[in-house]
Each structure stands twice: as structure tokens, then as C-alpha cells.
Image 1: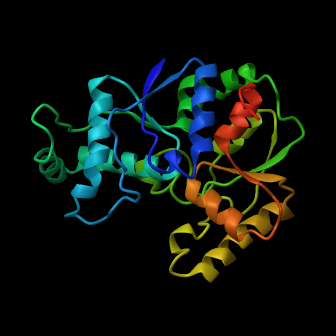
Image 2: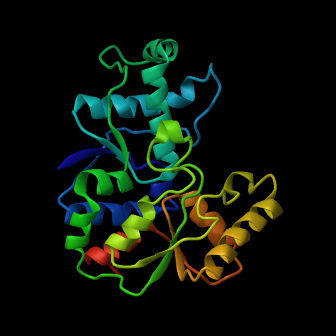
Length: 261
């Protein structure tokens, strides 16, 4: 199976592990992540301004390229996925925005919606199937107690992202179970880590991160797993505990037997 792949900027710098482990795992599962040609930064955050067009054009081009190949568009970074999914939704539901966007597109490229946008976790759940993931596991993570950390961008806004229940998600917990580990449920798993206020209010960001980590430790988690580079950075930087924070793709690669080092 071949899917269009949008890696995003951070996976080329601070989050190389998220990308590398995703590629290895996908290959082991018979999936080819076909990187889009000449992709550009997704914009980093989805702008809510009605007149904001320029920051969304790279996402629209990515959506159009995937559509031209009749492929699903996949990302592994929560932030990139959020921008791609929200931009796609705006194209499909706002004809004025769609018209304005297409005025900026190349003559041979237009886009009015239709591309299926999936996070890598959704690809594993909805296309591959967690039961098939479980069958492919070579090194089950038996006995490990792992807390899922969702953060803000993976689930919200719920009506647009449509990945899981915003208040009581389970996709990461089901993923953890498929790898043979035990998911730890804790109250702060889908609360903000404070990443986007780290520069403006570092003390508040640190307080929020410690609140999450302390809650997870208190419920017995031995490590946290996330899909967001900013969340991982913020939790590691501000955490006072020694609990590791890892990307979900690293756990997958380990369980599938394709993790190196």
C-alpha cells in the first residue's frame, strides 16, 4: 500500500526519531510512505483569521498532490496533521475560502476537497487494524505500564478532527494494548502541556507539564507516549521526574522488531 506522506519541518530537525521509526514501522507493515515532492512548512498552527490565506497554501498544495495520486495523505506530527485536516475541512465547507485559495494555485493545480487525511495512528487503526498490528508484533511490550499523552492538537477541534472522543479518547490506549503493554489511564492525558505559552509564560508552562507528569506517575505510569514533538520537548524540559517521554512510533518500531540501537 502506498500513501502520500507529509513529514513536516520538525521531523527534519528535533523530531527525527518520530519520522525514522514511522518509516521503518510502515515498511514492516507493508506500507510505503511516499514523501510529497517539494513540500513546505504546514504553517505550524492553523490560523483562525478569515482573511488568512498565505499560511495555508502549502497545506492545500499537499492535499492537491495527494489527490492527484489518488492516495491518502498521512502525517505523524500532531501539529502538521491538525493544520492539514483543518485546512481540508475549510476548503470543503467554505466556498469563498476555496475560491480565494485556488486563485493562488498554479494553472495546472486546483483543489476543492476530497482528499482523505489521516494521522498515522488512524492509518494503523482504520486501515491496517490494531488486530493486525498485534499479529505483526515480534517483541511484545509485556508488563510495561505506559501512559498515553494526547495533548491539544491531536483531538481538537473534535468535530473537524474526528479522530476520537475529545474527552475520553482511546486510540492511543488501544495502540498500547496492541503492542502488548498496559495503558495507564490518568486525568491529565488530554490536557495542554503549556507548549504554546512556553516563551510567554515559562513558569506556567512548567507548572502545567509537571501537573501532567505527576498525575501520570501517581497512577503508575512508567513512561509517557505522545505524537507531538512540542509536547515531548515541553514535558522533558519541565519535568522533574525521571519518567521518559517517547514517540509512539518508537514503541511501534520496538514491538515490530525494527528499532535500531
